[in-house]
Image 1 (cartoon, rainbow, N blue to C red):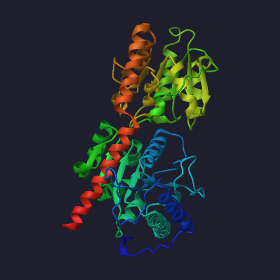
Image 2: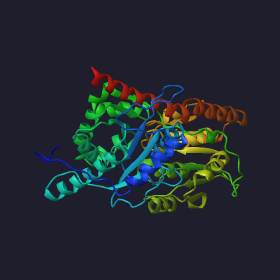
Image 3: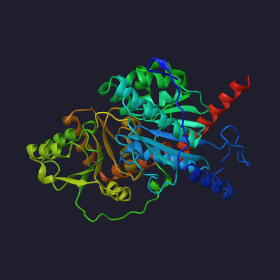
Image 4: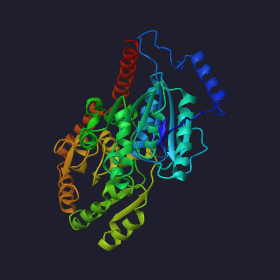
Amino acid sequence: MQLFGCYSYVQCTPFPWRERFERWDAKSVASGEVHHASRFSQRFHAKDRVQILRVLFFFGWSIREVGGAEFSVLGLAEGLLRAGHSVAIADVQKQGSTEKSIGSLQVPYWSIPRAPEPKDVRSSAAFARGVWQTLAVLREFRPDIFSVQSPVFQTALAVGASRLPHHWHLAITVRGSDIRVIPKTFPLLGPWQEDLFERADAVIAVSQSLLRDALNLYPSMRDKAQVIPNSLDASWFDKPVVQPTDDERHVLFVGRFHIVKGIDILLRAWSLLQGHVAGINLWLVGEGEELGSLRSLSDHLGVSKSVRFKGYRAQEELPSLYRAAEIVVLPSRNEGLPRTALEAGACGAICVGARTGGIPETILDGVTGFLVDPESPEALAQGMLRALCLPESDKRRMSAAARAHIQQNFNQETMVARYEQLFQSILRKRTAQEMA
Protein backbone atom coordinates (compact mmCIF):
# COMPACT_ATOMS: atom_id res chain seq x y z
CA MET A 1 0.00 0.00 0.00
CA GLN A 2 1.48 3.34 -1.02
CA LEU A 3 1.37 5.52 2.11
CA PHE A 4 3.74 8.13 3.50
CA GLY A 5 6.04 7.82 0.47
CA CYS A 6 6.91 4.15 0.98
CA TYR A 7 5.26 0.76 0.63
CA SER A 8 3.84 -0.84 3.74
CA TYR A 9 1.35 -3.57 4.45
CA VAL A 10 -1.25 -3.89 7.17
CA GLN A 11 -1.94 -7.37 8.49
CA CYS A 12 -5.29 -7.63 10.27
CA THR A 13 -6.04 -10.23 12.92
CA PRO A 14 -9.61 -11.41 13.54
CA PHE A 15 -11.76 -9.32 15.85
CA PRO A 16 -12.61 -11.08 19.13
CA TRP A 17 -16.30 -11.09 18.28
CA ARG A 18 -15.89 -12.84 14.88
CA GLU A 19 -17.33 -16.06 16.33
CA ARG A 20 -20.47 -14.22 17.46
CA PHE A 21 -21.07 -12.85 13.95
CA GLU A 22 -20.46 -16.23 12.34
CA ARG A 23 -23.08 -17.72 14.68
CA TRP A 24 -25.40 -14.84 13.72
CA ASP A 25 -24.79 -15.57 10.02
CA ALA A 26 -25.48 -19.27 10.44
CA LYS A 27 -28.66 -18.63 12.40
CA SER A 28 -29.90 -16.18 9.78
CA VAL A 29 -29.25 -18.61 6.94
CA ALA A 30 -30.99 -21.42 8.80
CA SER A 31 -34.04 -19.31 9.54
CA GLY A 32 -34.23 -17.86 6.05
CA GLU A 33 -34.21 -14.32 7.39
CA VAL A 34 -30.89 -13.34 5.80
CA HIS A 35 -28.99 -15.18 3.08
CA HIS A 36 -25.24 -15.36 3.64
CA ALA A 37 -22.45 -17.08 1.77
CA SER A 38 -18.84 -16.50 0.87
CA ARG A 39 -18.09 -13.03 -0.43
CA PHE A 40 -16.79 -14.64 -3.61
CA SER A 41 -19.95 -16.59 -4.32
CA GLN A 42 -23.07 -15.51 -6.14
CA ARG A 43 -26.14 -15.18 -3.89
CA PHE A 44 -29.62 -15.09 -5.39
CA HIS A 45 -33.27 -15.22 -4.36
CA ALA A 46 -34.61 -18.41 -5.83
CA LYS A 47 -37.81 -16.66 -6.86
CA ASP A 48 -36.66 -13.54 -8.70
CA ARG A 49 -32.91 -14.09 -9.04
CA VAL A 50 -32.07 -10.85 -7.24
CA GLN A 51 -28.54 -10.98 -5.88
CA ILE A 52 -28.29 -10.81 -2.09
CA LEU A 53 -25.90 -8.07 -0.99
CA ARG A 54 -23.57 -7.53 1.94
CA VAL A 55 -23.33 -3.78 2.48
CA LEU A 56 -21.08 -1.98 4.96
CA PHE A 57 -22.04 1.65 5.57
CA PHE A 58 -19.11 3.83 6.70
CA PHE A 59 -20.43 7.09 8.18
CA GLY A 60 -18.43 10.31 8.51
CA TRP A 61 -19.13 11.00 12.19
CA SER A 62 -21.16 9.42 14.99
CA ILE A 63 -24.19 7.69 13.52
CA ARG A 64 -25.85 8.14 16.93
CA GLU A 65 -26.20 11.90 16.51
CA VAL A 66 -29.69 13.21 15.83
CA GLY A 67 -29.96 14.66 12.35
CA GLY A 68 -31.29 14.16 8.85
CA ALA A 69 -28.18 12.42 7.49
CA GLU A 70 -28.09 9.96 10.37
CA PHE A 71 -31.79 9.09 10.06
CA SER A 72 -31.46 8.70 6.29
CA VAL A 73 -28.54 6.27 6.53
CA LEU A 74 -30.27 4.23 9.22
CA GLY A 75 -33.47 4.21 7.17
CA LEU A 76 -31.59 2.93 4.12
CA ALA A 77 -29.92 0.24 6.23
CA GLU A 78 -33.29 -0.85 7.62
CA GLY A 79 -34.81 -0.92 4.14
CA LEU A 80 -32.05 -3.14 2.78
CA LEU A 81 -32.44 -5.46 5.77
CA ARG A 82 -36.16 -5.78 5.07
CA ALA A 83 -35.31 -6.66 1.47
CA GLY A 84 -33.23 -9.59 2.74
CA HIS A 85 -29.73 -8.14 2.44
CA SER A 86 -26.98 -8.20 5.05
CA VAL A 87 -25.99 -4.82 6.48
CA ALA A 88 -23.39 -3.50 8.90
CA ILE A 89 -22.48 0.03 10.00
CA ALA A 90 -19.20 1.64 11.00
CA ASP A 91 -18.57 5.27 11.92
CA VAL A 92 -15.73 7.48 13.13
CA GLN A 93 -15.74 9.37 16.41
CA LYS A 94 -13.12 11.38 18.24
CA GLN A 95 -12.53 8.64 20.78
CA GLY A 96 -14.31 5.76 19.11
CA SER A 97 -16.98 3.81 21.00
CA THR A 98 -17.33 0.44 22.71
CA GLU A 99 -21.01 0.10 21.76
CA LYS A 100 -21.84 -2.89 19.54
CA SER A 101 -25.37 -1.98 18.45
CA ILE A 102 -27.45 0.99 17.30
CA GLY A 103 -30.73 1.17 19.18
CA SER A 104 -33.29 -1.26 17.83
CA LEU A 105 -31.45 -1.76 14.52
CA GLN A 106 -29.95 -5.22 14.91
CA VAL A 107 -26.85 -5.02 12.72
CA PRO A 108 -23.11 -5.37 13.38
CA TYR A 109 -21.66 -1.99 14.38
CA TRP A 110 -18.16 -0.63 14.87
CA SER A 111 -16.88 2.79 15.86
CA ILE A 112 -13.37 3.75 14.79
CA PRO A 113 -11.43 6.56 16.47
CA ARG A 114 -11.03 9.56 14.21
CA ALA A 115 -7.51 9.60 12.70
CA PRO A 116 -5.66 12.68 11.42
CA GLU A 117 -4.41 12.93 7.85
CA PRO A 118 -0.72 11.95 7.80
CA LYS A 119 1.53 15.04 8.02
CA ASP A 120 4.34 13.93 10.31
CA VAL A 121 5.55 10.80 12.11
CA ARG A 122 3.03 11.05 14.93
CA SER A 123 0.00 11.71 12.75
CA SER A 124 1.16 9.06 10.26
CA ALA A 125 1.24 6.46 13.02
CA ALA A 126 -2.29 7.39 14.15
CA PHE A 127 -3.47 7.29 10.53
CA ALA A 128 -1.93 3.84 10.01
CA ARG A 129 -3.77 2.57 13.10
CA GLY A 130 -7.02 3.98 11.73
CA VAL A 131 -6.48 2.29 8.36
CA TRP A 132 -5.66 -0.98 10.15
CA GLN A 133 -8.92 -0.76 12.13
CA THR A 134 -10.88 0.03 8.97
CA LEU A 135 -9.36 -2.95 7.19
CA ALA A 136 -10.14 -5.16 10.18
CA VAL A 137 -13.81 -4.18 9.96
CA LEU A 138 -13.85 -4.85 6.21
CA ARG A 139 -12.28 -8.27 6.69
CA GLU A 140 -14.63 -9.03 9.55
CA PHE A 141 -17.84 -8.30 7.68
CA ARG A 142 -16.63 -9.13 4.13
CA PRO A 143 -18.93 -6.72 2.26
CA ASP A 144 -19.73 -6.74 -1.43
CA ILE A 145 -20.35 -2.99 -1.25
CA PHE A 146 -18.33 -0.55 0.86
CA SER A 147 -20.75 2.40 1.06
CA VAL A 148 -19.01 5.55 2.31
CA GLN A 149 -21.75 7.87 3.56
CA SER A 150 -21.02 11.60 3.97
CA PRO A 151 -17.28 11.44 3.19
CA VAL A 152 -15.79 13.62 5.92
CA PHE A 153 -13.59 12.35 8.74
CA GLN A 154 -13.53 8.76 7.46
CA THR A 155 -12.38 9.80 3.96
CA ALA A 156 -8.64 9.27 4.38
CA LEU A 157 -9.23 5.92 6.11
CA ALA A 158 -11.38 4.75 3.21
CA VAL A 159 -8.68 5.85 0.74
CA GLY A 160 -6.04 3.97 2.73
CA ALA A 161 -8.17 0.81 2.71
CA SER A 162 -8.84 1.21 -1.03
CA ARG A 163 -5.11 1.22 -1.81
CA LEU A 164 -4.76 -2.40 -0.77
CA PRO A 165 -6.03 -5.31 -2.91
CA HIS A 166 -9.69 -5.93 -2.14
CA HIS A 167 -12.80 -7.63 -3.47
CA TRP A 168 -15.43 -5.14 -2.33
CA HIS A 169 -16.78 -2.31 -4.48
CA LEU A 170 -16.82 1.33 -3.46
CA ALA A 171 -19.94 3.53 -3.55
CA ILE A 172 -20.05 7.03 -2.06
CA THR A 173 -23.09 9.07 -1.02
CA VAL A 174 -22.72 12.84 -0.54
CA ARG A 175 -25.35 14.55 1.59
CA GLY A 176 -24.57 18.27 1.85
CA SER A 177 -22.01 19.67 4.26
CA ASP A 178 -19.51 17.02 3.15
CA ILE A 179 -19.28 18.85 -0.19
CA ARG A 180 -20.36 22.39 0.56
CA VAL A 181 -18.79 23.08 3.97
CA ILE A 182 -16.11 20.59 4.99
CA PRO A 183 -13.67 21.12 2.05
CA LYS A 184 -13.55 24.82 2.94
CA THR A 185 -13.33 24.27 6.69
CA PHE A 186 -10.75 21.48 6.40
CA PRO A 187 -8.75 22.24 3.22
CA LEU A 188 -6.44 19.25 3.76
CA LEU A 189 -9.45 16.98 3.26
CA GLY A 190 -10.00 18.04 -0.38
CA PRO A 191 -7.23 15.94 -1.96
CA TRP A 192 -8.36 12.88 0.00
CA GLN A 193 -11.95 13.36 -1.18
CA GLU A 194 -10.77 13.70 -4.77
CA ASP A 195 -8.74 10.50 -4.46
CA LEU A 196 -11.72 8.67 -2.97
CA PHE A 197 -14.11 9.81 -5.72
CA GLU A 198 -11.64 8.70 -8.40
CA ARG A 199 -11.53 5.24 -6.86
CA ALA A 200 -15.32 4.93 -6.52
CA ASP A 201 -17.44 2.64 -8.64
CA ALA A 202 -20.43 4.95 -8.12
CA VAL A 203 -21.21 8.30 -6.50
CA ILE A 204 -24.68 9.22 -5.26
CA ALA A 205 -25.91 12.72 -4.39
CA VAL A 206 -29.15 13.23 -2.47
CA SER A 207 -30.30 16.18 -4.60
CA GLN A 208 -29.76 17.64 -8.07
CA SER A 209 -28.30 20.83 -6.64
CA LEU A 210 -25.80 18.87 -4.56
CA LEU A 211 -24.79 16.82 -7.59
CA ARG A 212 -24.06 20.03 -9.52
CA ASP A 213 -21.91 21.34 -6.67
CA ALA A 214 -20.07 18.02 -6.36
CA LEU A 215 -19.33 17.91 -10.09
CA ASN A 216 -18.04 21.48 -10.05
CA LEU A 217 -15.69 20.53 -7.23
CA TYR A 218 -14.70 17.07 -8.51
CA PRO A 219 -15.49 16.79 -12.25
CA SER A 220 -13.77 13.39 -12.52
CA MET A 221 -16.86 11.70 -11.03
CA ARG A 222 -19.18 12.89 -13.81
CA ASP A 223 -19.56 9.54 -15.59
CA LYS A 224 -20.40 7.59 -12.44
CA ALA A 225 -22.58 10.03 -10.49
CA GLN A 226 -26.35 10.08 -10.10
CA VAL A 227 -29.08 11.36 -7.78
CA ILE A 228 -30.98 9.18 -5.33
CA PRO A 229 -32.93 11.45 -2.97
CA ASN A 230 -33.51 10.88 0.72
CA SER A 231 -36.86 9.39 1.65
CA LEU A 232 -39.35 8.57 4.38
CA ASP A 233 -40.77 5.17 5.27
CA ALA A 234 -44.47 4.54 4.73
CA SER A 235 -45.32 4.97 8.41
CA TRP A 236 -44.94 8.74 8.07
CA PHE A 237 -48.04 8.80 5.90
CA ASP A 238 -50.07 6.64 8.30
CA LYS A 239 -49.09 7.96 11.71
CA PRO A 240 -52.15 8.58 13.93
CA VAL A 241 -52.97 12.16 14.81
CA VAL A 242 -52.16 12.89 18.45
CA GLN A 243 -53.42 16.17 19.83
CA PRO A 244 -50.50 18.23 21.21
CA THR A 245 -50.66 18.98 24.91
CA ASP A 246 -49.92 22.64 24.14
CA ASP A 247 -52.56 23.89 21.71
CA GLU A 248 -51.29 27.44 21.17
CA ARG A 249 -51.02 28.54 17.55
CA HIS A 250 -47.45 28.37 16.37
CA VAL A 251 -44.98 28.65 13.51
CA LEU A 252 -42.53 25.73 13.67
CA PHE A 253 -38.83 25.17 13.08
CA VAL A 254 -37.31 21.69 13.54
CA GLY A 255 -33.60 21.03 13.27
CA ARG A 256 -30.11 21.38 14.70
CA PHE A 257 -29.21 24.71 16.23
CA HIS A 258 -26.32 25.32 13.86
CA ILE A 259 -25.33 28.41 11.90
CA VAL A 260 -26.04 26.70 8.57
CA LYS A 261 -29.70 26.20 9.57
CA GLY A 262 -30.30 29.98 9.56
CA ILE A 263 -32.26 30.20 12.81
CA ASP A 264 -30.80 33.67 13.37
CA ILE A 265 -32.37 34.71 10.06
CA LEU A 266 -35.68 33.27 11.25
CA LEU A 267 -35.53 35.24 14.51
CA ARG A 268 -34.83 38.48 12.61
CA ALA A 269 -37.72 37.74 10.25
CA TRP A 270 -39.94 36.99 13.26
CA SER A 271 -39.08 40.38 14.75
CA LEU A 272 -40.31 42.01 11.51
CA LEU A 273 -43.66 40.23 11.85
CA GLN A 274 -44.47 41.54 15.32
CA GLY A 275 -47.82 43.29 15.14
CA HIS A 276 -48.86 41.14 12.13
CA VAL A 277 -49.10 37.72 13.81
CA ALA A 278 -50.97 38.35 17.05
CA GLY A 279 -51.70 35.19 19.02
CA ILE A 280 -49.08 33.08 17.19
CA ASN A 281 -45.78 32.01 18.73
CA LEU A 282 -42.57 30.75 17.17
CA TRP A 283 -41.56 27.25 18.28
CA LEU A 284 -37.93 26.21 17.87
CA VAL A 285 -37.57 22.44 18.23
CA GLY A 286 -34.05 21.08 18.49
CA GLU A 287 -30.77 21.55 20.25
CA GLY A 288 -27.18 22.38 19.40
CA GLU A 289 -24.22 24.66 19.84
CA GLU A 290 -26.06 27.84 18.86
CA LEU A 291 -28.68 27.63 21.61
CA GLY A 292 -27.07 30.24 23.88
CA SER A 293 -26.46 32.77 21.11
CA LEU A 294 -30.00 32.30 19.77
CA ARG A 295 -31.50 32.97 23.18
CA SER A 296 -29.39 36.13 23.43
CA LEU A 297 -30.46 37.21 19.94
CA SER A 298 -34.11 36.60 20.83
CA ASP A 299 -33.74 38.88 23.86
CA HIS A 300 -31.88 41.49 21.82
CA LEU A 301 -34.58 41.58 19.16
CA GLY A 302 -37.33 41.88 21.78
CA VAL A 303 -39.18 38.75 20.64
CA SER A 304 -38.42 36.41 23.55
CA LYS A 305 -42.01 36.57 24.82
CA SER A 306 -43.30 34.95 21.62
CA VAL A 307 -40.40 32.53 21.01
CA ARG A 308 -40.50 29.08 22.61
CA PHE A 309 -37.30 27.00 22.76
CA LYS A 310 -38.84 23.54 22.88
CA GLY A 311 -35.68 21.47 23.06
CA TYR A 312 -35.22 18.02 21.58
CA ARG A 313 -38.31 16.06 20.57
CA ALA A 314 -38.39 12.36 19.77
CA GLN A 315 -39.36 11.23 16.28
CA GLU A 316 -42.73 9.94 17.46
CA GLU A 317 -43.64 13.43 18.71
CA LEU A 318 -42.87 15.25 15.46
CA PRO A 319 -45.96 14.34 13.34
CA SER A 320 -48.29 15.99 15.84
CA LEU A 321 -46.09 19.09 15.92
CA TYR A 322 -46.04 19.33 12.13
CA ARG A 323 -49.78 18.84 11.78
CA ALA A 324 -50.59 21.41 14.46
CA ALA A 325 -48.26 24.08 13.04
CA GLU A 326 -49.62 27.02 11.09
CA ILE A 327 -46.54 26.73 8.87
CA VAL A 328 -43.10 25.07 9.01
CA VAL A 329 -40.08 27.23 8.21
CA LEU A 330 -36.74 26.21 6.67
CA PRO A 331 -34.51 29.31 6.74
CA SER A 332 -31.31 27.39 5.98
CA ARG A 333 -28.23 28.92 4.41
CA ASN A 334 -27.70 25.61 2.64
CA GLU A 335 -29.10 22.10 2.57
CA GLY A 336 -28.45 18.79 0.87
CA LEU A 337 -32.03 17.51 0.93
CA PRO A 338 -33.71 18.57 4.19
CA ARG A 339 -35.46 15.79 6.09
CA THR A 340 -37.59 18.38 7.88
CA ALA A 341 -39.21 19.34 4.58
CA LEU A 342 -39.96 15.68 3.83
CA GLU A 343 -41.44 15.01 7.27
CA ALA A 344 -43.49 18.20 7.30
CA GLY A 345 -44.80 17.61 3.78
CA ALA A 346 -45.74 14.02 4.63
CA CYS A 347 -47.83 15.41 7.49
CA GLY A 348 -49.52 17.93 5.21
CA ALA A 349 -47.73 20.96 6.67
CA ILE A 350 -47.19 24.02 4.51
CA CYS A 351 -43.50 24.92 4.35
CA VAL A 352 -41.79 28.23 3.74
CA GLY A 353 -38.17 27.67 2.77
CA ALA A 354 -35.11 29.44 1.46
CA ARG A 355 -34.42 28.95 -2.23
CA THR A 356 -31.09 27.21 -1.67
CA GLY A 357 -29.55 23.75 -1.90
CA GLY A 358 -32.08 20.93 -2.14
CA ILE A 359 -34.97 22.86 -0.59
CA PRO A 360 -36.55 23.77 -3.99
CA GLU A 361 -36.67 20.04 -4.80
CA THR A 362 -38.87 19.39 -1.77
CA ILE A 363 -41.07 22.53 -1.85
CA LEU A 364 -42.91 23.42 -5.06
CA ASP A 365 -43.28 27.20 -4.93
CA GLY A 366 -46.93 28.23 -4.79
CA VAL A 367 -48.10 24.60 -4.99
CA THR A 368 -46.94 22.83 -1.82
CA GLY A 369 -45.42 25.83 -0.03
CA PHE A 370 -43.40 28.97 -0.69
CA LEU A 371 -39.77 29.68 -1.56
CA VAL A 372 -37.97 32.90 -0.64
CA ASP A 373 -34.57 34.44 -1.23
CA PRO A 374 -31.93 32.93 1.08
CA GLU A 375 -30.28 34.88 3.92
CA SER A 376 -32.91 37.62 3.76
CA PRO A 377 -35.01 38.21 6.90
CA GLU A 378 -37.24 40.58 4.90
CA ALA A 379 -37.97 38.00 2.19
CA LEU A 380 -38.55 35.28 4.79
CA ALA A 381 -40.95 37.52 6.75
CA GLN A 382 -42.94 38.25 3.58
CA GLY A 383 -43.13 34.54 2.69
CA MET A 384 -44.25 33.59 6.18
CA LEU A 385 -46.92 36.30 6.21
CA ARG A 386 -48.16 35.19 2.80
CA ALA A 387 -48.53 31.60 4.01
CA LEU A 388 -50.19 32.62 7.29
CA CYS A 389 -52.76 34.74 5.46
CA LEU A 390 -53.88 32.06 3.00
CA PRO A 391 -57.63 31.35 2.85
CA GLU A 392 -58.59 28.05 4.45
CA SER A 393 -59.46 26.53 1.07
CA ASP A 394 -55.97 27.30 -0.26
CA LYS A 395 -54.39 25.87 2.89
CA ARG A 396 -56.29 22.60 2.43
CA ARG A 397 -55.33 22.40 -1.25
CA MET A 398 -51.67 23.15 -0.55
CA SER A 399 -51.57 20.68 2.35
CA ALA A 400 -52.91 17.86 0.17
CA ALA A 401 -50.45 18.75 -2.61
CA ALA A 402 -47.53 18.70 -0.18
CA ARG A 403 -48.45 15.27 1.11
CA ALA A 404 -48.90 13.87 -2.41
CA HIS A 405 -45.60 15.36 -3.63
CA ILE A 406 -43.58 13.77 -0.81
CA GLN A 407 -45.38 10.43 -1.03
CA GLN A 408 -44.83 10.15 -4.78
CA ASN A 409 -41.24 11.36 -4.97
CA PHE A 410 -39.58 10.60 -1.65
CA ASN A 411 -40.81 7.21 -0.45
CA GLN A 412 -38.38 4.75 1.10
CA GLU A 413 -39.42 1.78 -0.99
CA THR A 414 -38.30 3.56 -4.17
CA MET A 415 -35.04 4.75 -2.61
CA VAL A 416 -34.10 1.28 -1.36
CA ALA A 417 -34.94 -0.26 -4.75
CA ARG A 418 -32.72 2.25 -6.53
CA TYR A 419 -29.79 1.56 -4.20
CA GLU A 420 -30.35 -2.18 -4.70
CA GLN A 421 -30.30 -1.78 -8.47
CA LEU A 422 -27.19 0.40 -8.36
CA PHE A 423 -25.25 -1.90 -6.05
CA GLN A 424 -26.18 -4.98 -8.07
CA SER A 425 -25.23 -3.28 -11.33
CA ILE A 426 -21.81 -2.48 -9.85
CA LEU A 427 -21.29 -6.14 -8.99
CA ARG A 428 -22.46 -7.34 -12.41
CA LYS A 429 -20.21 -4.85 -14.19
CA ARG A 430 -17.14 -5.79 -12.18
CA THR A 431 -17.87 -9.51 -12.59
CA ALA A 432 -18.15 -9.06 -16.37
CA GLN A 433 -14.83 -7.20 -16.41
CA GLU A 434 -13.12 -9.93 -14.41
CA MET A 435 -14.47 -12.66 -16.69
CA ALA A 436 -13.49 -10.81 -19.90
